[in-house]
Image (tube, rainbow, N blue to C red; front, side):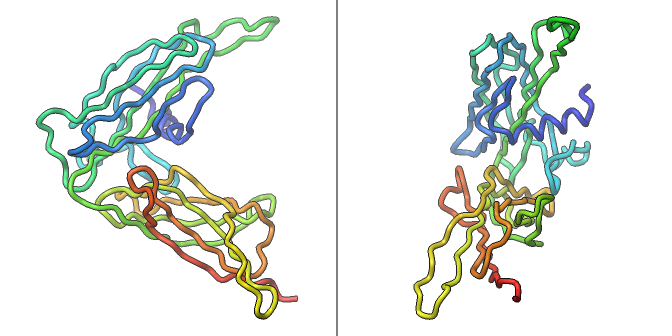
Length: 272
């Protein structure tokens, strides 16, 4: 049995588009009555052969990431009983890739709303865990894991809103727009958070200046099984001056072209 902390680590790794030892794409998949199958590509960019295993793990959404689901939570959350995957085991030489196919089982009934499980890919190096690396040093070959959420959707819709938005500074004094996203629908909302700024005219009668993007965060999801997801967007600026700061939650993938939420804030320069 995997230690819960290890499972949580694997879930966090799912949000990285690439890893040095193993790559997984896409970062998520949605199964519906019209799209009953999804394919994940596993690639091995390392200079070693790896043995891999595909399985399911159930994780609940938290404000910052994921946590292992309890037995009671799995009863209402898990999509794994409705899904099959193939192959469950694979071996990849350096530079090789393979596909994992996830399929809605024949006869499976779609839920009202959304169920979610995470496709977990674990890989072990095909050599001893500890070996000499030259000189007096030792090199440790660690197992690696990546995961991606798979949503099974029935009737329902996705909606979201911003909450608890504030402008803060990081340790180096740069501005960060920190916000929470709240899911309002039966389905999870997915996209990117974009922060933009429109400077105020500096003279009477001057035309409004153009909006510019200050920062964005991709691969953002708001899940119904948690009250909020917290997202920080670095703005890369010490100060903004007078103008309008706008925050948007723009849909991506199946929600491309949709704006889930938008808020604007008037920024006034400090006195003096």
